[in-house]
Length: 229
Image (cartoon, rainbow, N blue to C red; front, top):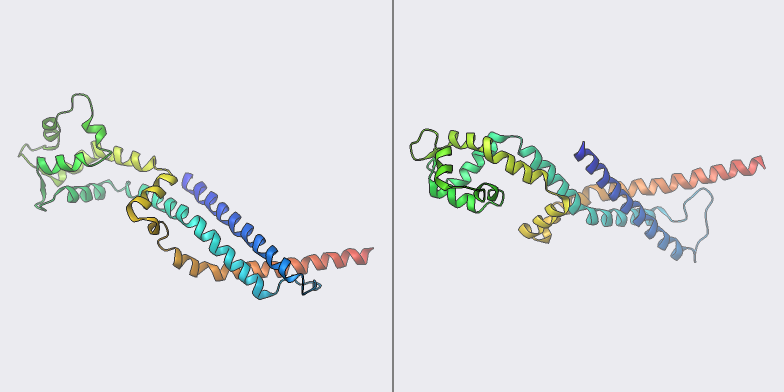
């Protein structure tokens, strides 16, 4: 429900910018054209090309302004879906810790990895924490190493909740800033060009048709009102 509401609010924000910008650009075009042309009955003041251009420019502006926000929301929804597959996440984390790729984790590998994870600080900074106790809890068969099945068990009991909480607590601004830090400003607009190409023509045609329909309907109602008089 929360993701649905967030998507709806983003769509409304995008639409507001789109239509507001269209009206602004159309107003400038109409002001410039008013010096050389007159209103045609049942037709919009601007011609089809001018309306199409205003619609295209408005869509570009709306997409550029809202694309980083939309991309951040998509990343948040994807992250929430990913944490639901705990075994796959545990396997992925195990592979990241297993630097020598021998299929087992040494105490050094696990220690170095956990020290570099912000979410792990809740474990490491706890009262009475000792590395040897942590290793003993992980090493279920007491062979001195941690295999994948042992790690998956520990992940489900101790790590998953921390990772999931970090994902759920993410906000849009935080995700946007993290994207800029990790990928630069260009990362926030990854795929934006393709999105503009796909949607600009369609939206410009929709707005152009809307203006023609509005002009015709307004003229029709005015004509009916005049006849009644």
